[in-house]
Image (cartoon, rainbow, N blue to C red):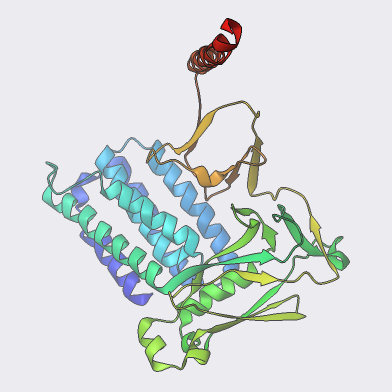
Amino acid sequence: MRGFNKIIATFFLIMPLHIYAENCDSLKTTITKWNTQILEENNQIAYKSIKEKYGEIKSWISNSDCSKESKDSLRVEVSAIFAFNGASKYGDLSEYQRTLLAISEICDQYPDSLNIEESLKNHFLAYKGICEERISVLKENYASLVIAMKSNREKNEMGIVINKNNINSGKPISIKITPPLAIRGDDIKYQRLESISQNFRLDFTDYDARIGFVKKIPFLPLPSRLERKEYGDEIFKTYAFTFDDSIRYRHPVNRKGSFDTLYIEPIHDWVLINQVPDAITVINMPKNLKYTIKNSNTDNTREDLRIKENNQVIIRKDIDKDIQIIFEEEGKRTNRYFYVLLRGLAVGLLILAPIIIF
């Protein structure tokens, strides 16, 4: 982390100052002070205010009358500070990855071939390189764990599991994570485990076409490849997950360097509340309505958000961004149905004609 802070500070200092209009200087000063402030913070409570301030500063940048290049430079700068000194520091790796990707998207608008000032071009290229390296590190050192409830049902339902003794208090099911010995000395990975434990809810809101609704824990730390060779299989591979201080599961890292699905038994005091969590939006679509789900920025289809058997679309807050539902035009659908009808009549006549003649 300290190395990253030095990198961020260095880039901030060598940025071409003359690209800023006079009214951009105050924003630059604000970002510098904010960076100094969050470096002094060191607790999870502070992270919430850091996220709020980050959103506030981005709004100020958007509403300023700086040039486009100046705005993008400031966006990259403040996003990098938040990613390295905020999200990563406090173990919020989902937000960390999203921020890195957002920085890369901005930098992609300024390729090496673009006719802009050399120092500004180098500024964007440098940040793009850092983000690509950090994303690669995430892929190599973390993997998602899927938790599914053992059930007699064909597919698991959506809902939140709580202990019936805590219904009034709203206290969630707790989880204690004991990592493999191979990563117990890694402070960054330990911070991620701390973040998972503190924010854990046993909510089955991710959809798997085979199992139904599951709980997904993203960015669960993996031992590095060097550590995999150094330690024995059992010591290196196995996590221990304890739910509600009462039931414990040992779960290994598989040969592919990821995790198989962890199936858990419900404790007798657990109840599944069939409700849509606050961070989930469920859209019930009419059965005969034809539509496509896409990401409006990349134009990629998002069929993973569609639950075909229930004819629903599920969108998760802060995860499924820039989602666009494109409905099929009524005229096209009508023409298609008319074509199907004509084809049906033609087939029917072909079948009936010999009978009628006979």
